[in-house]
Each structure stands twice: as structure tokens, then as C-alpha cells.
Amino acid sequence: MNWEQLLSLKRFGDTQKRPRIAQDETRLGFDVDFDRIIFSSAFRSLQDKTQVIPLSETDFVHTRLTHSLEVSVVGRTLGRRVGKVLLERHPNLVNLGYTFNDFGAIVAAASVTHDIGNPPFGHSGEKAIGEYFKTGNGAKYKDQLSAKEYQDLIDFEGNANGFKILTESREGISGGLRLSYATLGAFLKYPKESLPKKPTSHIVDKKYGFFQSEKNEFLDVVQELGMKPKSLENNSFYRHPLAYLVEAADDICYTIIDFEDGINLGLIDEDYALEYMIKLVKDTIDSKKYHSLQHKKDRVSYLRALAIGVLINEAVAIFLANEEAILSGSFEKSLLDKCKYEAQINDIIKISIDKIYKSNEVVEKEVAGYKIIADLLNVFVNALNNKFDGNQSNFDKLVLNLMPKEYQLESECLYGRIMQVCSYVSRMSDSYAIRMHKKLTGNII
View 1 (cartoon, helix red, strand yellow):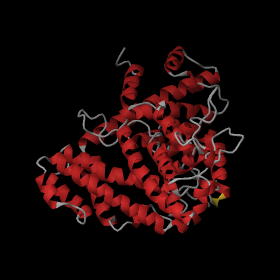
View 2 (cartoon, one colour):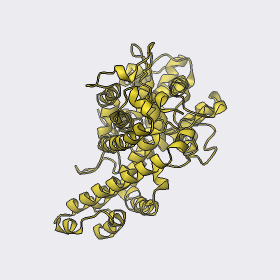
View 3 (cartoon, helix red, strand yellow):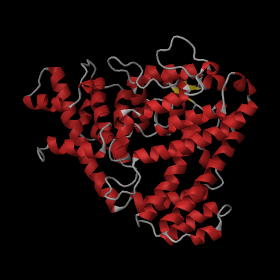
């Protein structure tokens, strides 16, 4: 892979090249990407989607939106720091007009979208959609779908749904948000189909990155960017190098900031937790300043800022030391998996799992989310299929009146109809999903 091709400013539908040197320096194409994402309705809905604590009654806890903004800030710094050195290594990029801010803008835009495809109720929402088609009423469709189509459903993936949101055409709007291909490439952490599932231990095979409904858009992006094929037979590719930075930004933020949430909510004892945080920042902490802070929130905030700084430095150093392997596709792990603080990070994640993610407050609401999502899928999939089959009941007609018209396109394909419903349900916020469920079950009028 080569950087000039990987930094493509092309957008869906372009008929002419977009040379970097011809860009308006006051509003670069990569900045336009970020702006389009921020103003999109899909991004806006993240303000009411779970990050750690579902439907928290406090005003402190992070949502998917605040988490995504923080990841983009870390991603921007990672991109700029890496970009500065890459321009020294590849002076031809300077001659083409690229600056270190371009790298920062690409990583920031891809980072701010990294959770845009997540359904309501956190990662349990993904599992709830999958379970509906694997063991619930949706299992009856298995024999009517291809193996890859069915795998898309039973392993419903937020990353693939995010690519759908960013690229899906609809009437009058081609190419979704029409982001630059460089940003789309950096977004694709798992550039492969849903099958075969985890064929190797390489990081790109951990999950999958696109649904069968967006296969053509995916192939267009990876071919334009010159991403290296891993298996052409299975439409599997090695990552765009900047996807490693997007992943690192997310890993840094959820490791440290979820932990911070747990401390501030009282789910993790402060003294116990700070012992683990200090292991990360022991070389950079100003003990006098730390002990002068009188409030727990301020002490935790100080350590959080130091820890993020330490991990940013680590991620940048690892990326630059392994640039050649990353470009060739032979770098098989995430950046933080190669980090000298791996043991400390794993300790923090283990505590977060035990004390936060498995807390009663989280588990109780995730259980409710399973029921809500299964019921929503059941009602809307049945209504859409009954309409197509000519067996529409009065209830089906009423239900479809609640569903936006853009999700009711006439599709001859069962997979297409099911994906329309999955897309609709996955874009609901937590609160909207609950309200819709109450309406459909007669609990609210």
C-alpha cells in the first residue's frame, strides 16, 4: 500500500480527480467529512445511546456521543503526531500538498463515526438483533437467505452498520454522506465479509466491516485506496493504516474514561482504582500537584489526562516503528496490544468488566433491551413482509404508518426488507426504542 493512494480525497460519484494541492486550505475535504458527520441525524442520535450505563439518571455518565467526540480528539492528536513524521519520511506527499493536519483530520473524522452504527442499549443491542435471527422468530428466514446474508443478521455488527449509514444511497441522495474515501478507509477496522468467521488470529479478522447490501460500495472504496487484498475470494483486505490509529483512540478512551465513570459513580472504590491508574502514569505524575487536589473528581480527572497522554505517546511510537509492517498487512495486532503498559491496561479493563459492565444497573437494562429489540424487529419485519406478500392486516398498516417511508422501499429481496427494518431499529436512540415498544404493546397512547 502507498500513502498517496491511501490519502485519496475521492467521493462517491466523482468523475474527476481531487488533487490535494488544489484544495481550499480554509476548508479541506477531510474537514468537510467531519462537518457532514456532526450535522447528520445518525450522529445526533448518539446523544441518547448507551456508552457504559444504560439510561443513567445522573448527568455525569458518558453517552455514545460524548465518547465519540472524545475519541475524535484523541484520534486527531494521534493523526497529527504520526503525520508529522510520515511527511518527513515521504517528502513526495509534501510536494502533493499534504500536511500533518490532513492525517489528523482523517483520523478525527473516522474516529467520530466509529460508533455511529451501534444500535440502542450498547453492545447488548447488537447481540439482541443477532439472537432474534439465530434463536428467535427470525430464525425461520435462514433457509431463504444466502449463508453470508444470514451471517450478517445473526452476527449483526455495529461496524458494518456504520459503513451502511455512511455510504448507503437513498432516493435523491447517492453515496450516503459522501465522505472522502480516505476517511471511509480509516473507518473500516475490519475490511471483510461476515464469512468466513474469524479465519485467522489477525486483527482484521476479529469481526467484519460491511453487510452484503453494501458490498459494491466497499469494493469501490478499497480498490480506489489500493488496500492490499487478504483473500479476494472472500472479499477480505488488510487495513488502511490509519484504521490502527482510530482503533487506538477508541481503546484509549474506553479503557480510561469508562474506568473514570465507574469511579465517579461509586461502582469502583477510589483508593483501589487509583492504585491501578497510578501504575500507568508513575513516570509523569506530579505528586505534589496530585495531593493538592481536594476532590475525588479532580484527582481522577488529573490521572485520566495523564494516562491518555501516556497511551497516545505509546501508540504513536508503536505505529511509527511498525509503519512498514502496517503498510504490508503483516502487523497482526492492535497498537495497544504491543504497548509496554499492556498488563496495566488489561488490569483496568478486568476491573471495569467486573465492577461496571456486570453491575446490576447495567445488566437489568440490557435484559430489558433484549426484549424491546426482539419485539420491535418482530412487529416491523412481519408488517413489511406481509405487505410484500399481499397479506397485510389492519394492524400491519397501522404499524407501517409509524415507520419512516425511507425504510419501506419496495424490495423484491427478503434480505433487503429485513435489512431495512434492522437499519431502522438500529438507528433508534435508547429512549425512542422504549417509547416505540410501549406504543406497540399498548402500554402508552
